[in-house]
Structures are given as C-alpha cells and as structure tokens.
Length: 254
Image (cartoon, rainbow, N blue to C red):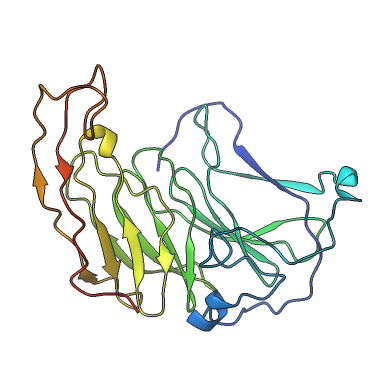
C-alpha cells in the first residue's frame, strides 16, 4: 500500500486497566463467545445479545469523572480525514483492531500505561473504507477489506495470513460490517445497497474460508412511477430493485 500525504496518522487512545495475561492467549471457542469472561471483550457487541453491557465495576458513576487519557497509539495510514470506526476487541490484555485500510493490529495493553504493537497485518487494500471491526474464532482474527471485498483470517499469535477469500462479485460491493463468529461459521454481510449493490449474507468455513452458503435474493424491479414514500423508493432518487421475501442460507449456521 503506497500512501502519499503529510497528514498525521489516526490515533488510538484508551483508558485501560493492567492485567496479568500469558503471551499466547487461549483459543476463542463458541462457549467463550456465549459466556465471555468479564474482563474480556471478544465480540463487537460483547456477546450475542448485542447489548454491549459490561459487568465490570471498576469504572462507575462515582469515579467516571476522574477518567483521563493514559496513552495513545498512532495507527492507520497518512491520508487526510482518516477515522477509526471499529470497535476494538480485547482478550486477556491484548487488543485487536482494524483501521480503514483493512490493516489489523495486535496491541499489548497489559500494563495499562502503554500500548505496544506486536504485529500488523496489512492486506494491501486499494481503497480506504469504513470497516467496523474484526471477529475472533479459535486462534484466528477474521477481518474484511472494505471495498476490496475480501475476508482474511490472520493467526492471532504470529500475525501471518492463514487464508484470504475474495467475495467481490459486484463493482460497488463493500464489506464494512464486522464478521460474526458462530460455532462452525463466520457470517459476513455485503453492503453498498445505496450504490445499487444486490446485498447478500454468506457463511464461511472458519478453518478454510470456503463458502458454506450464500442466498440469492428473489428480486423484482420497482416501477419508476411508484409514489414517493412507498417501500423501495426515495423522493428524488431512482427506484431500485428490492427483495420480495427473505431467502434462507443454503446451510444454516449452528
């Protein structure tokens, strides 16, 4: 990736607590995702309830006013107007976060006073994108590459790419949402509907990246003469195709 700009890199800042943790963390199992340890944040929404609720009580209503910046880490590229839209994941004192270029970082934050980048996986993404996070499964960090349309599994310990799956099937398709890890599936959804993309949801085998199943939505055109305000139309914009009914995956995740 070749970026030319004098703009400052995006900074990742945190107010963190120190914790004792081994250098190599345990595999992230389905059972751990169902019942994450209180000190860990293993999914973008914390757990499958998607409530983003933490049971930790070190920071509470009485002391939150005393929070202050402990350290900041410069990540990302050097092009102007970059921003971090991803939710970092934390497992036993190690943080995993992705920037807008699809680069994934493993950061040691165990001290609570500084962050040390242990590795960076740079997929060579061509276009800056909106990427919302990664997923943890087994010993892998699963990430997407935005407008490149790829899903990548990176070894959590070494930072080496294990598999790289290209799902780019349309010019404007974008993979911006964080993947969702299940027991035997990685769920990825396409975005770009505002650019005319026929979106889909796909299930990947987390061990190989092979596709388990992708729905082919039944679409029908919406008449351009349809009145504004009805489903499938927006005043001032051309009508687009829309799904008439949900179509299940060819293989249901467990």
